Length: 375
Picture (tube, rainbow, N blue to C red):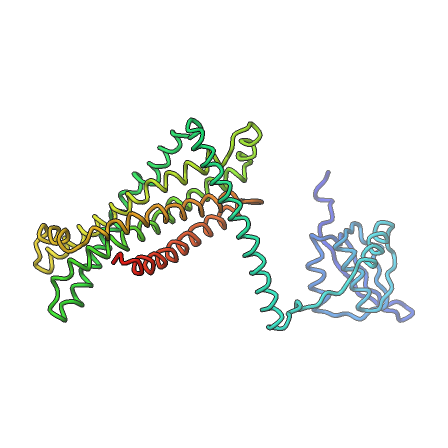
């Protein structure tokens, strides 16, 4: 085909006949590739005509037919010279044309608020049922594995214990050390106003063992491992690997979900204790550097003033926080459907929901332990 002979543009000519009628004649190709320039010219010139002649139009498509019909409609003109193809397209355009509002419909604020509230409530109810269903499946799978211990994926369990626990020691240790430094330094500044700077040891030791050690660890694990669980399972769901596992008779809950949950349950208390101890070391380091409290004196003082109950409070919280983080990450990963965008959305939801739930449960534990006298 000779590309030079192809008509790739369209043009228009406005002239007056001997009888006084004004004619707008279109020439060339009136297609989606060329109508933008013609449409722009017509809007700028706004010509008045009574006849729209398209006899010289060599090529026309749906976009071109729509423009021809619109020009004729707005000018109240008659279309002449249309080919068989042009007549069919213009006829189809006439039957399906409609005028949409320029601005979308906006309901009243009260109506919109009520509708959105109802939507959130219904989604919350449906989501709660899905969470309960997932938790029930986890419990059933755990019971089945408990009755048949050989079905436990021990290799996967050890692997995830390494990923959740051992591989995160560095970042958790650094974070905990810096948090301990901040607690001791800021606490000493405030206590110095009352001449009670020595109680910095009490403050650092108790808050690290009882609260911040396990809490900051849970937040870090939620951002590091919880998001990884959601992304891994979500990608497997998207690529139909999980469906393939079901097809060959392998339970995804048993092979994928349960090892991740057990690994997090086991490692979270250990990571919490590790974090608390490193935070105390950080407090001792800043105290030795700026407050004149010797490093080992700080550590020995912690043993004297911090009750053992604080350590057990942190240890008790660990498995609960680990369960929340692992369940949230695995649940969101198993809910992925549709597209890769859903993986990112569910991963974000897993981190946000896990951190929110951990802080909420920590507040509950604070009140509970206070009521039972564990203070």
